[in-house]
Amino acid sequence: MTSNNDQDHIIPLDHPRYESLKYRHKIIEGMRTLIVAEAGLIAHGRGECFDYMLGEKTNETAKEAIKAAVALLLTAKHAIISVNGNTAALCPNELVELSKIINAPLEINLFYRKKGRIEAIKNVLQGAGAKKILGLNELSMVEIEELSSNRRNVDPNGIKIADVVFVPLEDGDRTEALKKIGKKIIAVDLNPISRTSLWADITIVDNIVRALPEMIKIAKKLKDADEKELINIIQRFDNKKNIQLSLNTIIKYTKKQKKKLL
Image (cartoon, rainbow, N blue to C red; front, side, top):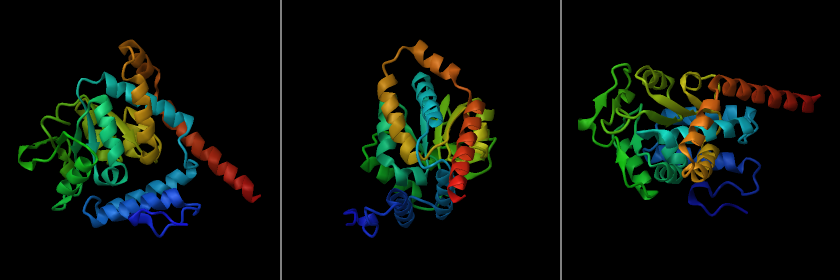
């Protein structure tokens, strides 16, 4: 038996790597439709490696980070969700749903600005129900002086004025630059010792395809919570401890697999 979905029809539903291969094909299809840059395939593969070492599941440490991240987004004055090609290809519906729940606009921000990519990402987000998308008009963009890559160009009504920026699947240099100009950064990164993970205020060490649905679930629970409760959640969170626990998870899982070989 195989999947009925055109993009992954060649993957048997009983394949032990079905979920992983399904998302791999989404990335491949995203490259074909200009949503994903060629380098995005390499980045996805690197993430798969770390996901293996995390046991390919959302652990309790990640859930605590997700809860703190949602609380920070809900208490922000101007929260923004930054969208790149891989995120748009993997989970556009979840991005749009989270955006609506926490009332944070989506802003397209790309490292590789190949002609047609912004339009392609805009179309997939609109197809998922997005009503407000920033980062579309390149003529109106402003620069972040601390950054030299194409990611320095941001929307004046989005990342430029945001106090909290959610940057799933991020480049470390931009995370560092945004931190230096006073913004709080929430990142999703399967590598707990990447520059992004180390610079972010809240690092969710998890696969984006699992993290976003969990964020949506938590956001629905917390959206009507008292502000004091949300602030308490944020204040209890320690990102250094979070990263240490994530590294411990990798070590424990790796040792467990090693024992199976003895």
